[in-house]
Image (cartoon, rainbow, N blue to C red; front, top):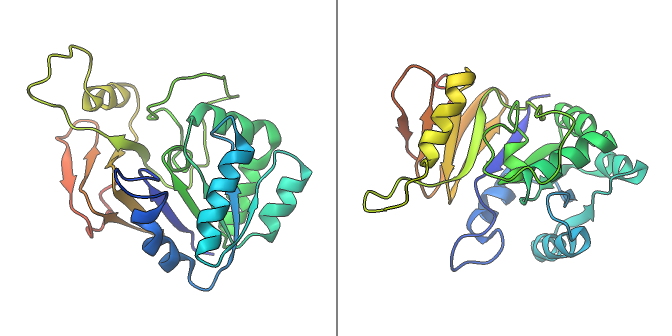
Length: 233
């Protein structure tokens, strides 16, 4: 079946509640689906995270179950019509999914028709690897290889350089260009408030802000909300 995915830069916008800025898009991609598996592994307090997400989705009429890193987690995935992978630390998220065997299970369920949704770290792991995450490696996963549900890398929470800044460290773009010195995969850098919607082989940019696409050997490209990414990445 054609993959259906929503890859969101951030779960909360300044001045708004959890998932408020993207809930209309979430409801649109879900359609009539009501059963959601929430993946809380990117935060240390999984129970608290699952409760927060559950309350938000239940307000919209969805039935939510938290994924657990055991055999019951596999049963939850098989029950779910959609999965939402919450943000937090990408290394912790990936390690838990790898160690539990749930990484392969999620990939299989997406290919069977389960809708995949993620924010921040949850979007990171939809890429071939997590090499373009912003997070610290607080744990060591088995490898950097992730779900590979899209053929490009993702960098959420992308921040443009501030010309007046006196900070002397690398900008976010410089860090991503370092990735491209060693890797050929294009990077879609999502500013907060932006997301990528996937319908089969079609990728489109949505949300309130533009995204930046970086490729080895060419100038960075700005893409507007509503623009089709298919063929550019």
